Image (cartoon, rainbow, N blue to C red; front, side):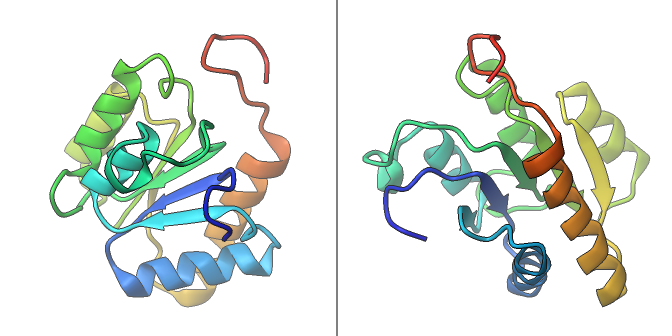
Length: 152
């Protein structure tokens, strides 16, 4: 992706295998043109709030965030909490995509404002289909609101 370009999908995933599978699934649905991947929660927050390595990036927010929960530095629940606490990021749809299926993670994710919670399927074909369907829905079907609350 071109440096400084607007990002439609922010993928927050530390597992290289899972990240590669997500990218393959998005590519199969022609959704990889504007994807940014970060490998930990700190980098996700830096990206979203234009800090650190991302301080000079274009002032726009992604259309959707695919967020793992088990992340180094800052976990996914904390990323979600900080997103929802800020007026510029609180309306960004967040899909929690994690290997956890624990009830406490599901409840905590929704309490913090997740829009969807998906347990990562183990089978490759199922994973590709699920991610492709998610990408298509959030990028092509879902309507987004601007940070101020007006339709976007």
